[in-house]
Image (cartoon, rainbow, N blue to C red):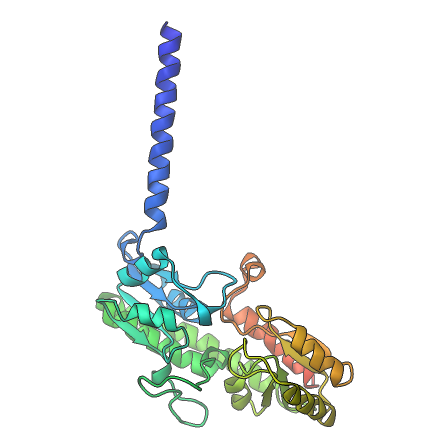
Length: 315
């Protein structure tokens, strides 16, 4: 009898423990960023913005990247957990100009501040990337230009400092360190992309326009600014002829886009290579597992571009 009572007690304790653990797990899964152990809750629309917020915020912030690993950010629809985190954050950062329509629409419901980044940035020609409220026909891929990424970092610093004035000195210090790294990345690109045999970059979609302008290159995309845009046969024929005329060796595609069209163009242009460039819109599962980050992926892109353009090697 005593043995039976002990067994029943142990079984009851186990059940209570399991129920408690499940309850904690459920609570954590819907915990808004703002409630993360006293840290400043930050919602970031997608990877480059989340990377900047994490590096600038450091230990003072808890950053929620609203775009999951491997997801395509343009068409992202928020689930209830993501929406809770967005609405509950102390400050939110979105790119703006309808880059992520569902995310930006949800951010309009917030009580706290939401920082739209695109209208605050100035491109290599000295023009605003976007006007306040402007949508349609804009190139959103500012993070692929290290100089524009540095400006974005400055805007993240200001947004964090406004939301958390006590952390302003920390944010300023962290932002400066990150901007120094971006200046060094810019210098690597300038050095490596000087004296190349070619300057035409053929890509699956036109994500690399800011980068090309910054470093004196020309970009021609199979599709337009949207990776889902289907090119017509005339466009493929035009690009195939241009690639032959310009001595192009490589057609660049992306992990999240089907390589079929790029492979067709490469074949039609005379058997060119295809190579993957990262648009850095989100990390793939493999990149996450390999602990890749903004800098390692930008450096990998640089190596591939330099090889394709016949740039002289650097020591």
